[in-house]
Image (cartoon, rainbow, N blue to C red; front, top):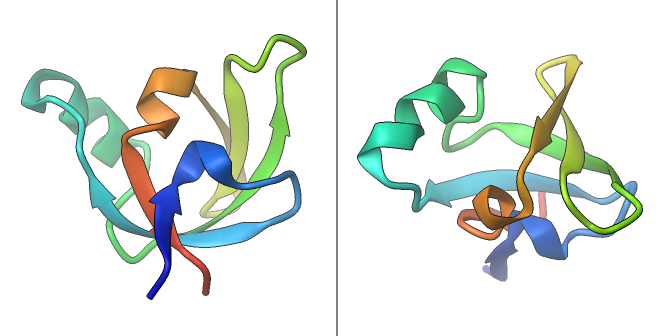
Length: 77
């Protein structure tokens, strides 16, 4: 199983969340937005300077800071 950071996906690529290595004080916000282990997502695009990143998860678009996307690990579906 090839696990990589969410931020390494190219626009149009899909991934399945395996782990979220975000400090507990910020993890709740991420989980409340529907980004849970086992969730399939799609990288939509990167902002012109690479931060933030936009993903599609559970039918809606979500923007994450690049440092957050670096800590969400995904595998290819």
